[in-house]
Length: 87
Image (cartoon, rainbow, N blue to C red; front, side, top):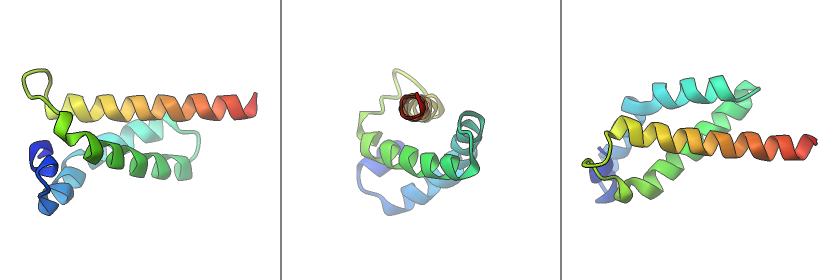
């Protein structure tokens, strides 16, 4: 799916959402204090996935691992930003 996204296949974007939406949502809900924050995070994560789809290398990781790593990194960045604002 990620290789097809990198090649500009519009259908692959929807397939990516269907395939990895549950994973990304569950990570976001676990790491975000509010549902609205999780919704925003999911949008940001998928934009990041689409921007970086061309960097995916199946010799280094599975697609699921690649998506989870991007999601985790983005969520940690959001938490750090949030914590800085309230400190």
